[in-house]
Image (cartoon, rainbow, N blue to C red; front, side):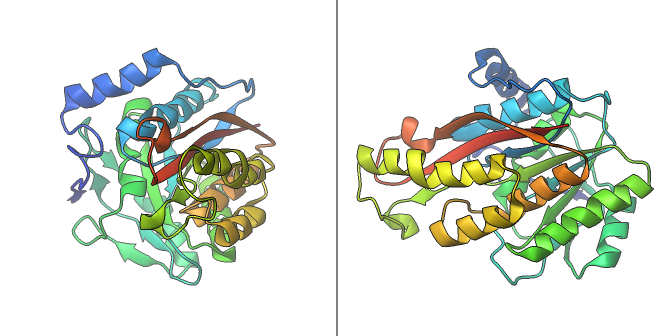
Length: 288
């Protein structure tokens, strides 16, 4: 089996098994973010910045999904991610495995083949892929919290195709009798001159505008489980870098029966590095 080698290990997250495990367990011990949902969690939205900035928030989502699931070990973790604008072909990796510091995570090849049959994907392989942080940074969390599960990774564009792909994933998995956990990987507003987005000026007031207005309005749409509005708002207001991934995760969550959403927490790179350039993050879980 061919294995996809990591690109961001050792820079965006630890590359040694001991260091990686210790970092995750330090996030858990910190307990900064906690779920209030009591139902069975089936899906989540996570950030994908370097772990020093958003790892604790992402970790809290995985912790909630692992603790509040009726199935001790789900069959497949579906990760939607990638920076995909409208109109581009969706991307899938449907064979091989992902290498992580904690061990390899095998691809759900049978499910991948079924999903790929219904949509025109650009297919990545362990030997040919675009370096991409949005999904790779999820793999150590997947391995730690769901050891033994397989993974299916998909990059859906910011448009209606994202919703159709998500529906196909759930339908085919159910036909195969597979239990799923869904992850949507996206950061929120990328603010600053280096991102070409400065509508609220600079300084603390700009951060507060991002936190209380620009990011809050798309978080509300994520909590309302409205995937179409998530994409619409992101394209209009630049407040999610992977809206197709978030919309696909919400659509899949609803197809699995999720009816409730909880915001585990909000954070921003500004909190650790206050400056003119920063990024917002949200951790959300969806439950039955």
